[in-house]
Image 1 (cartoon, helix red, strand yellow):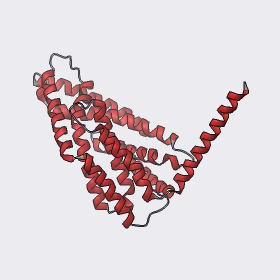
Image 2 (cartoon, rainbow, N blue to C red):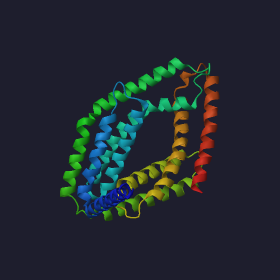
Image 3 (tube, rainbow, N blue to C red):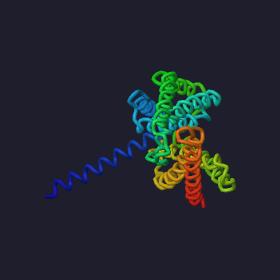
Image 4 (spheres, one colour):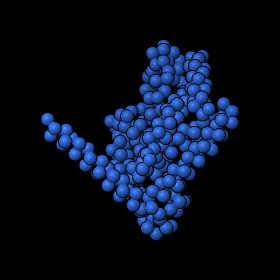
Length: 290
């Protein structure tokens, strides 16, 4: 009766020892070698979900997340690299993500608008969605991610070898997490003071929270104290502000595509509802900031 229990205990101890060994290795790692170890899986994730004729809504979302995480990774290593080169790469990734986002915006919009309403032109929505998807496919095809992303990784690795002196990975991680946390704090303070109509200040909070969250996820294996508590609070902020962003983006999208409604009166009624929903979600997001 005791043997299975002893085997289980031994396996648990060995698992803890393996985890400790991996953490010790990570703590000894240098910032130069850490980048490719984190970057390569992200490239694989992007290529796995890159857009094609049968891409699903989930593929589009996963693609955008992986591209955002790559942009955050480049931002983290920016102090050790040529800043202009990093910003060019980040701008390229932003354009690609925006293309995928344009195709997904219609799917989000349809969850916020009553598509069964007789005043809503479903066939026109379908045509707009197909057009957005075609545009995204064209942009992603031209981006040639299969080759450009590995090229970006290789350029960064070369830059790290010839650029500024590196530092231990743990120290580097602490410095960059601190920088992202301070930046988020500034954005939160600006949002608290901003007029309710100044949505950009609120959107900046969401972007700052995502950046800090991704950094904590990148660097959590080398943090002996862990980042779980901080990640939970960031996920809550990201969720609330994400819901706000969905409503604002949908309002803007349909404002620019009023032709999907049967007439101006129907369009105005739908946009008025959306505007009220934006305000409701903005209040919910504001409550999180205290």
